[in-house]
Length: 194
Image (cartoon, rainbow, N blue to C red):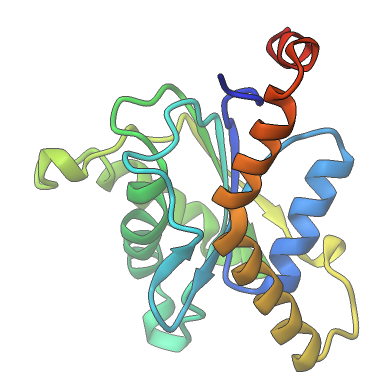
C-alpha cells in the first residue's frame, strides 16, 4: 500500500538555498513535490531518482544552468543537452504522460531557445530508443530572483547541502518507518487509502 498520491511535481537545482526556496514555496502553496539536489562535482541527482523515472510526472521544475556553466559553455544547445541527459532522461518516464517543463532561472535570456532545443532533441530519431523521452507539452520560465532569500553565505549553503544529502540518505528508512506506524492500526490504513 502506498501512503501518498503519485508524484506529479519534481524540482531540481544545484544550489541548496535555491532548491529549499522553491520546494518550500511550492509546499506552502499546497503543491506537493519531490526534490533532487544536483551534485555538480559528481554530475548526479541526489537522491537517485526511481528506476525508469516518475511515471505520473506532470511538472518538472529545473534550474536552467544546473552545472553552473559560464561563457561559451553556456550556449542554448549545451544547456539543453545537459538538461536532457542529467535531468529529463533520469526523471521523465519513457512511457510517461504529458508534462510541462519549467526552467527556474536567474538567466532568462537563453530560456526560450533552450526550451526549443529540448523539445526538438528529446525525441529525435538520432537518440537511441532507450534514451528518448516524451517532449514537454510546454516549456516556460520562472524567474528565481523574487523568490530567493538574500544575504546567504557559503556556510549556510554548505549546511543546507549537508542537510539535503543526509535527508536523501535516510529517505527510504523514513518512508519505511512511516509505513510501519500507519500499518500498526487498520483505521490508519483505511484513512491513508481513502
